Length: 187
Image (tube, rainbow, N blue to C red):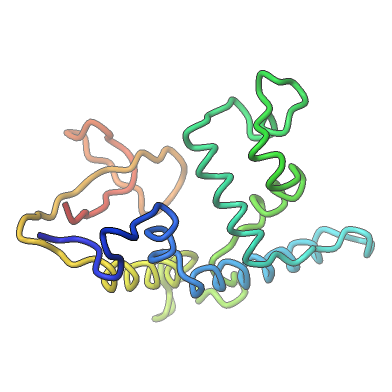
């Protein structure tokens, strides 16, 4: 039988499982790259010093991800509604975790790689997944370190729906989801 290798069955909590994959290394990457991008973006868009980027710390990113998870199962028409004064929409957990403007500032500046270091298209180091490559490599290593594959399993493909523009997007007419990213999964 397969399963998690670093957590005993008595100690399994949602947080402990999450922390096995989202390690300090991942949080450090997100914090560092978000701060780099936030400063670059503010410098480009600001003519005065009054609109400076306020650095994020690990606690901010933890709160941000927690809010994103809650938004996933408590869906509203717009992100801004979670902080609404209208009791129909208001979510006390989210509004007490982080101010709306701070959440949106992190949301619009969240980054996983420094754009200024991206290799030019056509160069030998160029990668279509440059912006997420380090993140995916760390996450893959964490999965490999924390999960022991059991006797039963298979590899299958799945489509993740995506309608935007991307050179990675595929069109497979016989799939229920015809356009999007094709991903290989260990099942």
